Length: 269
Image (cartoon, rainbow, N blue to C red; front, side, top):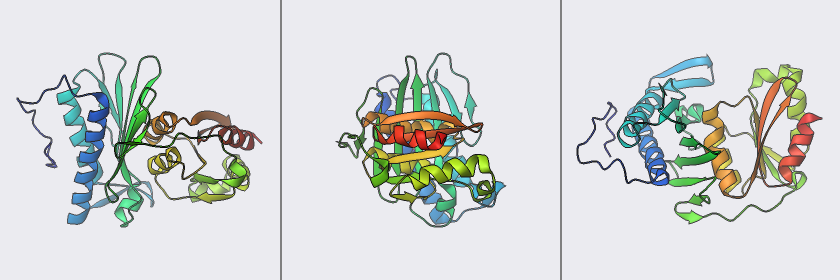
């Protein structure tokens, strides 16, 4: 596929009917991540959205345009929701959720802890996710009907775990530490883990949970593009996912069976 930053034109020789969803999802994130990395190497213009750490670059926008154009060729009847503003109404219940660069602050500052991520939702709770880390070359795919794989190799199924002896991957934006409705449950769940990691890319965190690196991931107020790709990977690895409301905020939790239930109870207090 072309990695031109312009919107690619449909190719007349492209077979749009035979490519399986899982292969298409993997191709989308690999192409988007490769494009974003190349643009980073060429230099970036950075724009702030809501805060000094909430940023967007031309790489985000170009990667999202590329994914949207590819889906228009391969899945013209599917809906698309993108972090950077793409909204394509679908003709049925299938919808792609797109995060062209997850961990943009890391991406801008030279860290390798970022990825491109997509999810596909469908009827009967169908969920498929794909995550690609361009700097490491790792690609993860999995979901409700597909066991999670890393670079084509099935990951080890997640066994029950204990949060008290495991790692919690999480994030809380610094200003929210002054909000007791968020800070209190964050404090409780953090104290309940053996250690915590705050690394700045939810989809990379969740891919790590699916591979058994972290025991639980938890974060509040997640948009679909920050939650669904990684949730698919965790569920495809045999993990548990939950959403719980605490003090008016939704918390999203994923990880090993047993440990997720412990995390939910800690959040609730």
